[in-house]
Length: 538
Ligand SMILES: *[C@@H]1O[C@H](CO)[C@@H](O)[C@H](O)[C@H]1NC(C)=O
Ligand SMILES: *[C@@H]1O[C@H](CO)[C@@H](O)[C@H](O)[C@H]1NC(C)=O
Image 1 (cartoon, rainbow, N blue to C red):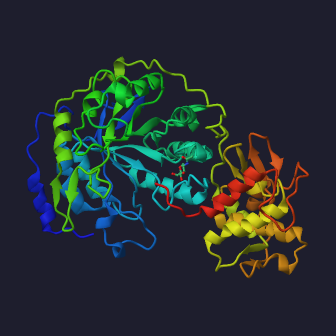
Image 2: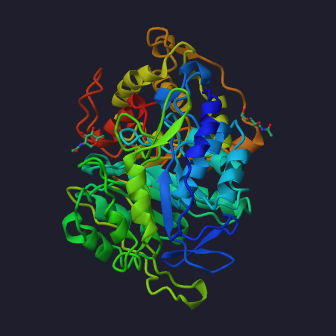
Image 3: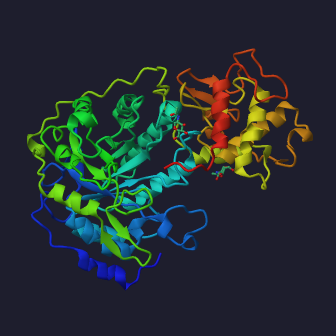
Protein backbone atom coordinates (compact mmCIF):
# COMPACT_ATOMS: atom_id res chain seq x y z
CA UNK A 1 0.00 0.00 0.00
CA UNK A 2 1.39 3.36 -0.99
CA UNK A 3 0.48 6.71 0.37
CA UNK A 4 1.64 9.85 -1.36
CA UNK A 5 2.41 13.08 0.35
CA UNK A 6 -1.25 13.94 -0.18
CA UNK A 7 -1.92 11.63 2.74
CA UNK A 8 0.16 13.79 5.00
CA UNK A 9 -1.40 16.91 3.56
CA UNK A 10 -4.73 15.49 4.66
CA UNK A 11 -3.65 16.20 8.19
CA UNK A 12 -4.61 19.75 7.39
CA UNK A 13 -8.23 18.65 7.38
CA UNK A 14 -8.24 18.25 11.10
CA UNK A 15 -10.17 20.99 12.77
CA UNK A 16 -9.48 22.25 16.23
CA UNK A 17 -10.65 20.01 19.03
CA UNK A 18 -13.75 21.33 20.69
CA UNK A 19 -14.49 21.00 24.37
CA UNK A 20 -14.24 17.27 24.68
CA UNK A 21 -16.71 15.26 26.65
CA UNK A 22 -14.17 12.48 26.74
CA UNK A 23 -11.20 13.95 28.52
CA UNK A 24 -8.09 13.78 26.43
CA UNK A 25 -4.85 12.60 27.94
CA UNK A 26 -2.16 10.18 26.84
CA UNK A 27 -3.32 6.57 27.03
CA UNK A 28 -0.61 5.50 29.43
CA UNK A 29 -2.81 4.48 32.35
CA UNK A 30 -3.79 0.85 31.71
CA UNK A 31 -7.43 -0.19 31.79
CA UNK A 32 -8.45 -2.76 34.39
CA UNK A 33 -11.67 -4.62 35.13
CA UNK A 34 -13.42 -4.38 38.47
CA UNK A 35 -16.80 -6.04 38.69
CA UNK A 36 -18.83 -4.98 35.69
CA UNK A 37 -16.88 -1.80 34.94
CA UNK A 38 -13.60 -0.70 33.39
CA UNK A 39 -11.29 1.67 35.24
CA UNK A 40 -8.04 3.47 34.69
CA UNK A 41 -5.69 1.54 36.89
CA UNK A 42 -3.85 4.49 38.39
CA UNK A 43 -6.33 7.36 38.37
CA UNK A 44 -9.20 5.06 39.40
CA UNK A 45 -11.57 6.83 37.02
CA UNK A 46 -14.16 4.80 35.19
CA UNK A 47 -13.43 4.14 31.53
CA UNK A 48 -16.23 4.48 29.00
CA UNK A 49 -15.10 3.55 25.57
CA UNK A 50 -15.80 5.88 22.74
CA UNK A 51 -14.49 3.62 20.06
CA UNK A 52 -14.18 3.33 16.32
CA UNK A 53 -13.60 0.12 14.35
CA UNK A 54 -10.40 0.59 12.39
CA UNK A 55 -9.88 -2.01 9.71
CA UNK A 56 -7.95 -1.49 6.50
CA UNK A 57 -10.05 -1.66 3.35
CA UNK A 58 -8.55 -4.48 1.31
CA UNK A 59 -9.96 -3.07 -1.91
CA UNK A 60 -7.45 -0.22 -1.63
CA UNK A 61 -4.56 -2.64 -1.18
CA UNK A 62 -2.49 -4.00 -4.02
CA UNK A 63 -2.80 -7.76 -3.48
CA UNK A 64 0.74 -8.27 -4.77
CA UNK A 65 1.99 -6.31 -1.73
CA UNK A 66 0.65 -9.04 0.55
CA UNK A 67 2.41 -12.29 1.43
CA UNK A 68 0.87 -15.29 -0.33
CA UNK A 69 -2.35 -16.35 1.31
CA UNK A 70 -2.63 -13.33 3.58
CA UNK A 71 -6.12 -11.87 3.49
CA UNK A 72 -5.66 -8.82 5.67
CA UNK A 73 -3.57 -5.75 6.35
CA UNK A 74 -2.84 -4.78 9.92
CA UNK A 75 -3.63 -1.06 10.06
CA UNK A 76 -1.25 -0.70 13.02
CA UNK A 77 1.68 -1.47 10.75
CA UNK A 78 0.92 1.32 8.27
CA UNK A 79 2.63 4.33 9.76
CA UNK A 80 1.63 6.78 7.02
CA UNK A 81 -2.01 5.84 7.49
CA UNK A 82 -1.70 6.19 11.25
CA UNK A 83 -0.19 9.65 10.87
CA UNK A 84 -3.11 10.61 8.71
CA UNK A 85 -5.86 8.94 10.74
CA UNK A 86 -4.90 9.39 14.39
CA UNK A 87 -5.55 13.16 14.32
CA UNK A 88 -8.93 12.52 12.69
CA UNK A 89 -9.78 9.98 15.39
CA UNK A 90 -8.59 12.33 18.08
CA UNK A 91 -10.77 15.13 16.76
CA UNK A 92 -13.69 12.72 17.06
CA UNK A 93 -12.95 12.29 20.79
CA UNK A 94 -12.11 8.66 20.09
CA UNK A 95 -10.45 6.96 23.04
CA UNK A 96 -10.29 3.45 21.61
CA UNK A 97 -9.98 1.69 18.29
CA UNK A 98 -10.88 -1.88 17.51
CA UNK A 99 -8.49 -3.65 15.15
CA UNK A 100 -9.51 -6.97 13.61
CA UNK A 101 -6.30 -8.61 12.45
CA UNK A 102 -2.77 -8.12 13.75
CA UNK A 103 0.25 -8.88 11.58
CA UNK A 104 2.64 -10.59 13.98
CA UNK A 105 5.52 -10.37 11.49
CA UNK A 106 5.61 -6.56 11.50
CA UNK A 107 6.11 -3.80 14.06
CA UNK A 108 3.18 -1.93 15.57
CA UNK A 109 5.48 0.36 17.58
CA UNK A 110 5.08 3.59 15.64
CA UNK A 111 1.30 3.48 15.37
CA UNK A 112 0.89 2.40 18.98
CA UNK A 113 2.95 5.40 20.06
CA UNK A 114 0.88 7.82 17.96
CA UNK A 115 -2.29 6.34 19.40
CA UNK A 116 -1.01 6.44 22.93
CA UNK A 117 -0.02 10.09 22.65
CA UNK A 118 -3.49 10.85 21.31
CA UNK A 119 -5.17 9.13 24.27
CA UNK A 120 -6.36 6.17 22.23
CA UNK A 121 -6.51 2.60 23.54
CA UNK A 122 -6.63 -0.50 21.35
CA UNK A 123 -8.78 -3.59 21.56
CA UNK A 124 -7.62 -6.33 19.20
CA UNK A 125 -9.12 -9.49 17.79
CA UNK A 126 -6.76 -12.45 18.16
CA UNK A 127 -7.81 -14.20 14.96
CA UNK A 128 -7.30 -13.22 11.35
CA UNK A 129 -9.43 -14.21 8.35
CA UNK A 130 -7.36 -17.30 7.57
CA UNK A 131 -6.90 -18.39 11.18
CA UNK A 132 -10.05 -18.30 13.21
CA UNK A 133 -12.54 -20.77 14.60
CA UNK A 134 -14.79 -21.85 11.77
CA UNK A 135 -18.42 -21.81 12.89
CA UNK A 136 -19.30 -24.61 10.47
CA UNK A 137 -16.40 -26.88 11.40
CA UNK A 138 -15.16 -25.74 14.77
CA UNK A 139 -11.88 -26.92 16.24
CA UNK A 140 -9.39 -25.48 18.69
CA UNK A 141 -6.03 -26.64 17.43
CA UNK A 142 -2.42 -25.65 17.83
CA UNK A 143 -2.33 -23.49 14.69
CA UNK A 144 -5.00 -21.29 16.23
CA UNK A 145 -3.37 -21.47 19.65
CA UNK A 146 -0.09 -20.29 18.18
CA UNK A 147 -1.75 -17.50 16.24
CA UNK A 148 -3.65 -16.18 19.26
CA UNK A 149 -0.67 -16.36 21.60
CA UNK A 150 1.55 -14.68 19.00
CA UNK A 151 -0.81 -11.70 18.92
CA UNK A 152 -0.78 -11.52 22.71
CA UNK A 153 3.04 -11.72 22.73
CA UNK A 154 3.16 -8.89 20.21
CA UNK A 155 0.74 -6.50 21.91
CA UNK A 156 1.07 -7.16 25.63
CA UNK A 157 3.91 -4.68 26.04
CA UNK A 158 1.81 -1.63 25.16
CA UNK A 159 0.07 0.05 28.09
CA UNK A 160 -2.69 1.23 25.77
CA UNK A 161 -3.79 -2.25 24.79
CA UNK A 162 -7.14 -2.52 26.52
CA UNK A 163 -8.21 -6.06 25.73
CA UNK A 164 -8.43 -8.97 23.32
CA UNK A 165 -11.36 -10.54 21.52
CA UNK A 166 -10.99 -14.32 21.37
CA UNK A 167 -13.72 -14.43 18.75
CA UNK A 168 -16.19 -12.40 16.77
CA UNK A 169 -19.71 -13.65 16.01
CA UNK A 170 -18.57 -17.25 15.68
CA UNK A 171 -21.91 -18.73 16.72
CA UNK A 172 -24.29 -16.45 14.84
CA UNK A 173 -27.52 -18.44 14.88
CA UNK A 174 -29.08 -21.62 16.22
CA UNK A 175 -27.45 -23.75 13.53
CA UNK A 176 -23.93 -23.32 14.87
CA UNK A 177 -24.14 -23.10 18.65
CA UNK A 178 -21.83 -26.12 18.88
CA UNK A 179 -18.94 -23.85 17.84
CA UNK A 180 -19.08 -21.92 21.11
CA UNK A 181 -17.29 -24.51 23.29
CA UNK A 182 -14.25 -24.13 21.03
CA UNK A 183 -14.32 -20.35 21.33
CA UNK A 184 -14.72 -20.57 25.08
CA UNK A 185 -11.76 -22.95 25.23
CA UNK A 186 -9.73 -20.28 23.45
CA UNK A 187 -10.82 -17.73 26.07
CA UNK A 188 -9.76 -20.13 28.83
CA UNK A 189 -6.39 -20.86 27.24
CA UNK A 190 -5.55 -17.24 26.43
CA UNK A 191 -6.36 -16.14 29.98
CA UNK A 192 -4.14 -18.93 31.29
CA UNK A 193 -1.40 -17.97 28.84
CA UNK A 194 -1.37 -14.33 29.97
CA UNK A 195 -1.07 -15.51 33.59
CA UNK A 196 1.57 -18.10 32.84
CA UNK A 197 3.71 -15.55 30.98
CA UNK A 198 3.21 -13.08 33.83
CA UNK A 199 2.03 -10.44 31.41
CA UNK A 200 -0.03 -7.49 32.56
CA UNK A 201 -3.59 -8.68 33.21
CA UNK A 202 -5.10 -7.73 29.86
CA UNK A 203 -8.72 -8.88 29.75
CA UNK A 204 -9.91 -11.44 27.20
CA UNK A 205 -13.48 -11.34 25.94
CA UNK A 206 -15.72 -12.02 23.01
CA UNK A 207 -17.77 -10.04 20.49
CA UNK A 208 -21.22 -11.51 19.95
CA UNK A 209 -23.90 -10.85 17.38
CA UNK A 210 -27.50 -9.93 17.96
CA UNK A 211 -29.43 -13.00 16.87
CA UNK A 212 -32.66 -13.04 18.84
CA UNK A 213 -32.75 -16.83 19.15
CA UNK A 214 -29.33 -17.28 20.71
CA UNK A 215 -28.17 -13.94 22.13
CA UNK A 216 -29.31 -14.66 25.69
CA UNK A 217 -27.82 -18.14 25.74
CA UNK A 218 -24.54 -16.79 24.35
CA UNK A 219 -24.30 -14.18 27.10
CA UNK A 220 -24.98 -16.86 29.71
CA UNK A 221 -22.69 -19.43 28.17
CA UNK A 222 -19.56 -17.30 28.01
CA UNK A 223 -20.15 -16.05 31.54
CA UNK A 224 -21.05 -19.32 33.28
CA UNK A 225 -18.84 -21.84 35.01
CA UNK A 226 -15.41 -21.33 36.55
CA UNK A 227 -14.02 -17.79 36.21
CA UNK A 228 -10.83 -19.16 34.59
CA UNK A 229 -12.95 -20.29 31.66
CA UNK A 230 -15.27 -17.34 31.28
CA UNK A 231 -14.94 -14.00 29.52
CA UNK A 232 -13.44 -10.97 31.25
CA UNK A 233 -15.79 -8.71 29.27
CA UNK A 234 -18.64 -9.05 26.82
CA UNK A 235 -18.75 -7.18 23.53
CA UNK A 236 -22.05 -6.90 21.76
CA UNK A 237 -22.32 -6.12 18.04
CA UNK A 238 -25.68 -4.47 17.70
CA UNK A 239 -27.35 -2.59 14.87
CA UNK A 240 -30.90 -2.27 16.13
CA UNK A 241 -30.99 1.53 16.61
CA UNK A 242 -31.71 2.83 13.13
CA UNK A 243 -32.48 6.45 12.33
CA UNK A 244 -34.63 8.41 14.76
CA UNK A 245 -35.14 5.50 17.10
CA UNK A 246 -35.50 5.30 20.87
CA UNK A 247 -34.48 3.10 23.74
CA UNK A 248 -37.82 1.36 23.45
CA UNK A 249 -37.95 1.02 19.67
CA UNK A 250 -34.39 -0.24 19.40
CA UNK A 251 -34.80 -2.70 22.25
CA UNK A 252 -31.84 -1.10 24.01
CA UNK A 253 -34.00 -0.65 27.10
CA UNK A 254 -34.46 -4.43 27.26
CA UNK A 255 -30.79 -5.11 26.57
CA UNK A 256 -29.91 -2.77 29.41
CA UNK A 257 -32.24 -4.60 31.73
CA UNK A 258 -30.90 -8.00 30.66
CA UNK A 259 -27.32 -7.04 31.37
CA UNK A 260 -27.99 -5.16 34.58
CA UNK A 261 -26.83 -8.14 36.66
CA UNK A 262 -23.98 -9.28 34.40
CA UNK A 263 -20.82 -9.60 36.46
CA UNK A 264 -18.25 -8.44 33.87
CA UNK A 265 -18.20 -5.25 31.76
CA UNK A 266 -20.44 -5.12 28.70
CA UNK A 267 -20.14 -2.71 25.79
CA UNK A 268 -21.15 -2.43 22.16
CA UNK A 269 -18.30 -3.98 20.20
CA UNK A 270 -19.86 -2.63 16.99
CA UNK A 271 -22.81 -0.30 16.54
CA UNK A 272 -24.15 2.19 14.02
CA UNK A 273 -27.04 1.02 11.86
CA UNK A 274 -26.75 2.80 8.49
CA UNK A 275 -30.32 2.53 7.28
CA UNK A 276 -31.49 5.23 6.89
CA UNK A 277 -28.35 6.85 5.52
CA UNK A 278 -26.67 9.22 6.24
CA UNK A 279 -26.52 8.42 9.92
CA UNK A 280 -27.51 10.91 12.59
CA UNK A 281 -26.10 8.84 15.45
CA UNK A 282 -28.92 9.77 17.79
CA UNK A 283 -28.12 6.54 19.68
CA UNK A 284 -25.02 8.19 21.08
CA UNK A 285 -27.17 10.18 23.51
CA UNK A 286 -28.74 6.95 24.76
CA UNK A 287 -25.53 4.95 24.97
CA UNK A 288 -23.78 7.55 27.11
CA UNK A 289 -26.90 8.66 28.93
CA UNK A 290 -28.15 7.94 32.43
CA UNK A 291 -30.20 4.84 31.58
CA UNK A 292 -27.43 2.90 29.92
CA UNK A 293 -24.17 3.98 31.56
CA UNK A 294 -24.78 2.09 34.80
CA UNK A 295 -24.77 -1.09 32.67
CA UNK A 296 -22.83 -0.47 29.46
CA UNK A 297 -19.26 0.82 29.17
CA UNK A 298 -19.81 2.66 25.91
CA UNK A 299 -19.29 1.32 22.44
CA UNK A 300 -17.39 1.12 19.19
CA UNK A 301 -18.80 2.71 16.04
CA UNK A 302 -18.55 0.62 12.94
CA UNK A 303 -16.38 1.90 11.20
CA UNK A 304 -13.65 4.32 10.25
CA UNK A 305 -13.04 3.59 6.57
CA UNK A 306 -15.71 3.97 3.94
CA UNK A 307 -16.08 0.73 2.02
CA UNK A 308 -18.68 -0.75 -0.29
CA UNK A 309 -20.94 -1.49 2.71
CA UNK A 310 -21.27 2.24 3.40
CA UNK A 311 -20.36 2.30 7.09
CA UNK A 312 -17.47 4.72 6.77
CA UNK A 313 -16.79 7.90 8.69
CA UNK A 314 -13.84 8.81 6.49
CA UNK A 315 -13.21 8.23 2.83
CA UNK A 316 -9.71 7.44 1.64
CA UNK A 317 -9.06 7.63 -2.06
CA UNK A 318 -6.58 5.62 -4.09
CA UNK A 319 -3.88 8.22 -3.52
CA UNK A 320 -4.29 7.85 0.23
CA UNK A 321 -6.00 11.18 0.84
CA UNK A 322 -8.58 11.13 3.63
CA UNK A 323 -11.73 13.20 3.80
CA UNK A 324 -14.45 13.31 6.42
CA UNK A 325 -17.88 12.08 5.42
CA UNK A 326 -21.12 13.49 6.76
CA UNK A 327 -21.34 10.54 9.18
CA UNK A 328 -18.12 11.75 10.75
CA UNK A 329 -19.53 15.20 11.32
CA UNK A 330 -22.80 13.85 12.72
CA UNK A 331 -21.02 11.54 15.13
CA UNK A 332 -18.67 14.30 16.20
CA UNK A 333 -21.64 16.55 16.91
CA UNK A 334 -23.38 13.92 19.02
CA UNK A 335 -20.27 13.06 21.00
CA UNK A 336 -19.58 16.69 21.81
CA UNK A 337 -22.61 16.90 24.02
CA UNK A 338 -22.39 13.66 25.97
CA UNK A 339 -20.83 13.28 29.35
CA UNK A 340 -21.15 9.77 30.74
CA UNK A 341 -21.27 9.74 34.51
CA UNK A 342 -18.92 7.23 36.03
CA UNK A 343 -17.92 6.13 39.48
CA UNK A 344 -14.52 5.97 41.12
CA UNK A 345 -12.94 2.58 41.38
CA UNK A 346 -12.32 3.03 45.10
CA UNK A 347 -15.93 3.80 45.85
CA UNK A 348 -17.32 1.03 43.70
CA UNK A 349 -18.34 -2.26 45.25
CA UNK A 350 -19.58 -4.64 42.56
CA UNK A 351 -23.17 -5.62 43.27
CA UNK A 352 -23.17 -8.41 40.71
CA UNK A 353 -20.75 -11.10 41.69
CA UNK A 354 -22.68 -14.16 40.56
CA UNK A 355 -21.90 -15.71 37.21
CA UNK A 356 -24.87 -16.73 35.10
CA UNK A 357 -25.97 -20.35 35.03
CA UNK A 358 -24.95 -22.26 31.91
CA UNK A 359 -27.83 -22.36 29.42
CA UNK A 360 -29.85 -25.53 29.19
CA UNK A 361 -29.99 -27.48 25.98
CA UNK A 362 -33.00 -26.44 23.92
CA UNK A 363 -34.17 -26.53 20.34
CA UNK A 364 -32.09 -23.40 19.68
CA UNK A 365 -29.13 -24.01 21.93
CA UNK A 366 -26.80 -26.99 21.75
CA UNK A 367 -23.42 -26.31 23.27
CA UNK A 368 -21.91 -28.33 26.04
CA UNK A 369 -20.46 -26.63 29.10
CA UNK A 370 -17.66 -29.16 28.72
CA UNK A 371 -14.82 -27.52 26.78
CA UNK A 372 -12.33 -29.09 24.39
CA UNK A 373 -8.75 -29.69 25.58
CA UNK A 374 -5.90 -27.22 25.37
CA UNK A 375 -3.88 -27.70 22.18
CA UNK A 376 -0.69 -29.58 22.94
CA UNK A 377 1.63 -29.76 19.98
CA UNK A 378 4.32 -31.99 21.57
CA UNK A 379 1.71 -34.72 22.10
CA UNK A 380 0.60 -34.31 18.49
CA UNK A 381 4.21 -34.65 17.30
CA UNK A 382 4.54 -37.85 19.33
CA UNK A 383 1.40 -39.16 17.68
CA UNK A 384 2.74 -38.21 14.26
CA UNK A 385 5.84 -40.33 14.90
CA UNK A 386 3.58 -43.35 15.51
CA UNK A 387 1.55 -43.14 12.33
CA UNK A 388 1.96 -45.87 9.75
CA UNK A 389 -0.31 -44.42 7.06
CA UNK A 390 -0.38 -40.68 6.34
CA UNK A 391 -1.84 -38.30 3.74
CA UNK A 392 0.33 -38.13 0.62
CA UNK A 393 2.10 -34.82 0.10
CA UNK A 394 -0.07 -34.00 -2.89
CA UNK A 395 -3.34 -34.45 -1.02
CA UNK A 396 -5.05 -31.09 -0.74
CA UNK A 397 -6.59 -30.34 2.61
CA UNK A 398 -9.98 -29.76 1.08
CA UNK A 399 -10.05 -33.38 -0.04
CA UNK A 400 -9.48 -34.68 3.48
CA UNK A 401 -13.20 -34.74 4.14
CA UNK A 402 -13.95 -37.51 1.64
CA UNK A 403 -11.34 -39.89 2.96
CA UNK A 404 -12.18 -39.00 6.47
CA UNK A 405 -15.88 -39.58 5.98
CA UNK A 406 -15.22 -42.94 4.38
CA UNK A 407 -12.86 -44.12 7.10
CA UNK A 408 -14.94 -43.02 10.05
CA UNK A 409 -17.93 -44.66 8.37
CA UNK A 410 -15.97 -47.89 8.06
CA UNK A 411 -14.71 -47.79 11.61
CA UNK A 412 -18.22 -47.40 12.93
CA UNK A 413 -19.57 -45.64 15.98
CA UNK A 414 -16.88 -44.62 18.41
CA UNK A 415 -14.23 -45.52 15.87
CA UNK A 416 -13.15 -41.92 15.45
CA UNK A 417 -13.69 -40.81 19.05
CA UNK A 418 -9.97 -40.18 19.48
CA UNK A 419 -10.32 -37.15 17.22
CA UNK A 420 -13.97 -36.22 17.87
CA UNK A 421 -14.92 -32.52 17.91
CA UNK A 422 -18.48 -32.70 19.15
CA UNK A 423 -19.24 -29.42 20.87
CA UNK A 424 -22.95 -30.14 21.16
CA UNK A 425 -22.41 -33.19 23.33
CA UNK A 426 -19.12 -32.11 24.83
CA UNK A 427 -17.16 -35.07 23.50
CA UNK A 428 -13.65 -34.31 22.33
CA UNK A 429 -10.99 -36.74 21.26
CA UNK A 430 -7.69 -36.46 23.07
CA UNK A 431 -6.16 -35.84 19.63
CA UNK A 432 -8.90 -33.45 18.49
CA UNK A 433 -6.51 -30.55 19.09
CA UNK A 434 -3.98 -31.85 16.57
CA UNK A 435 -3.93 -30.31 13.11
CA UNK A 436 -5.95 -31.72 10.25
CA UNK A 437 -3.00 -33.53 8.70
CA UNK A 438 -2.18 -35.41 11.90
CA UNK A 439 -5.83 -36.15 12.56
CA UNK A 440 -6.24 -37.60 9.08
CA UNK A 441 -3.03 -39.62 9.58
CA UNK A 442 -4.55 -40.94 12.78
CA UNK A 443 -7.68 -42.07 10.92
CA UNK A 444 -5.71 -43.51 7.99
CA UNK A 445 -3.49 -45.48 10.36
CA UNK A 446 -6.43 -46.80 12.29
CA UNK A 447 -8.11 -47.98 9.12
CA UNK A 448 -4.88 -49.45 7.70
CA UNK A 449 -4.33 -51.41 10.89
CA UNK A 450 -7.95 -52.58 10.93
CA UNK A 451 -7.26 -54.09 7.49
CA UNK A 452 -4.22 -55.99 8.78
CA UNK A 453 -1.93 -53.45 7.18
CA UNK A 454 -2.78 -54.54 3.67
CA UNK A 455 -1.01 -52.20 1.25
CA UNK A 456 -4.29 -51.56 -0.55
CA UNK A 457 -5.75 -50.15 2.68
CA UNK A 458 -3.29 -47.26 2.62
CA UNK A 459 -3.62 -46.01 -0.89
CA UNK A 460 -6.85 -44.18 -1.57
CA UNK A 461 -5.89 -43.56 -5.17
CA UNK A 462 -2.35 -42.65 -4.16
CA UNK A 463 -3.66 -40.01 -1.76
CA UNK A 464 -2.22 -41.88 1.22
CA UNK A 465 1.12 -43.56 1.77
CA UNK A 466 2.70 -46.05 4.14
CA UNK A 467 5.40 -44.76 6.49
CA UNK A 468 7.43 -46.45 9.19
CA UNK A 469 6.73 -45.33 12.74
CA UNK A 470 9.75 -44.48 14.87
CA UNK A 471 10.18 -45.88 18.34
CA UNK A 472 8.74 -43.73 21.10
CA UNK A 473 11.18 -41.89 23.32
CA UNK A 474 10.32 -41.79 27.01
CA UNK A 475 8.91 -38.26 26.89
CA UNK A 476 6.57 -39.26 24.12
CA UNK A 477 5.65 -42.46 25.83
CA UNK A 478 4.24 -40.54 28.79
CA UNK A 479 2.38 -38.11 26.59
CA UNK A 480 0.83 -40.75 24.40
CA UNK A 481 -0.12 -42.76 27.47
CA UNK A 482 -1.86 -39.75 28.95
CA UNK A 483 -3.78 -39.30 25.70
CA UNK A 484 -5.10 -42.84 25.91
CA UNK A 485 -2.46 -44.51 23.77
CA UNK A 486 -2.23 -43.98 20.04
CA UNK A 487 -5.94 -44.81 19.76
CA UNK A 488 -6.69 -41.74 21.84
CA UNK A 489 -9.80 -41.42 23.92
CA UNK A 490 -12.89 -39.32 24.06
CA UNK A 491 -12.74 -36.69 26.76
CA UNK A 492 -15.78 -34.92 27.98
CA UNK A 493 -19.15 -35.09 29.58
CA UNK A 494 -19.80 -38.72 28.82
CA UNK A 495 -16.80 -39.60 30.92
CA UNK A 496 -13.64 -41.03 29.50
CA UNK A 497 -14.16 -43.81 27.06
CA UNK A 498 -11.49 -45.39 24.98
CA UNK A 499 -11.33 -44.65 21.31
CA UNK A 500 -12.01 -48.04 19.78
CA UNK A 501 -14.55 -49.07 22.36
CA UNK A 502 -17.76 -49.08 20.42
CA UNK A 503 -20.84 -49.15 22.60
CA UNK A 504 -23.25 -49.71 19.83
CA UNK A 505 -23.92 -52.46 17.39
CA UNK A 506 -25.21 -49.92 14.91
CA UNK A 507 -22.25 -50.23 12.61
CA UNK A 508 -22.51 -48.41 9.35
CA UNK A 509 -22.84 -50.42 6.19
CA UNK A 510 -19.61 -51.48 4.59
CA UNK A 511 -18.50 -49.14 1.87
CA UNK A 512 -20.75 -46.32 2.89
CA UNK A 513 -19.87 -43.33 4.95
CA UNK A 514 -23.26 -41.77 4.64
CA UNK A 515 -25.47 -44.21 6.46
CA UNK A 516 -24.32 -44.61 10.05
CA UNK A 517 -27.54 -44.35 12.03
CA UNK A 518 -26.03 -43.86 15.45
CA UNK A 519 -23.08 -41.63 16.10
CA UNK A 520 -24.16 -39.76 13.03
CA UNK A 521 -23.98 -36.37 14.63
CA UNK A 522 -20.41 -36.94 15.71
CA UNK A 523 -19.54 -38.15 12.26
CA UNK A 524 -21.18 -35.18 10.60
CA UNK A 525 -19.29 -32.88 12.91
CA UNK A 526 -16.06 -34.67 12.08
CA UNK A 527 -16.63 -34.63 8.36
CA UNK A 528 -17.70 -31.03 8.45
CA UNK A 529 -14.61 -30.18 10.38
CA UNK A 530 -12.55 -31.34 7.46
CA UNK A 531 -14.79 -29.87 4.82
CA UNK A 532 -14.52 -26.53 6.44
CA UNK A 533 -10.76 -26.38 6.71
CA UNK A 534 -9.42 -23.03 5.73
CA UNK A 535 -12.73 -21.29 5.41
CA UNK A 536 -12.90 -17.63 6.19
CA UNK A 537 -14.62 -16.66 9.36
CA UNK A 538 -14.73 -13.02 10.26
C1 LIG B 1 -26.75 -19.38 10.16
O1 LIG B 1 -25.60 -18.68 9.77
C2 LIG B 1 -24.90 -19.26 8.69
C3 LIG B 1 -23.60 -18.52 8.51
O2 LIG B 1 -23.77 -17.14 8.46
C4 LIG B 1 -25.79 -19.26 7.46
O3 LIG B 1 -25.11 -19.84 6.37
C5 LIG B 1 -27.05 -20.04 7.77
O4 LIG B 1 -27.93 -19.96 6.68
C6 LIG B 1 -27.74 -19.50 9.03
N1 LIG B 1 -28.79 -20.44 9.42
C7 LIG B 1 -29.94 -20.05 9.96
C8 LIG B 1 -30.83 -21.15 10.42
O5 LIG B 1 -30.24 -18.88 10.08
C1 LIG C 1 10.67 -37.50 21.24
O1 LIG C 1 10.03 -37.79 20.00
C2 LIG C 1 9.24 -36.74 19.47
C3 LIG C 1 8.49 -37.23 18.27
O2 LIG C 1 9.33 -37.72 17.29
C4 LIG C 1 10.10 -35.52 19.18
O3 LIG C 1 9.32 -34.46 18.66
C5 LIG C 1 10.79 -35.10 20.45
O4 LIG C 1 11.68 -34.04 20.18
C6 LIG C 1 11.55 -36.27 21.08
N1 LIG C 1 12.03 -35.86 22.40
C7 LIG C 1 13.23 -36.16 22.85
C8 LIG C 1 13.56 -35.69 24.22
O5 LIG C 1 14.02 -36.79 22.18
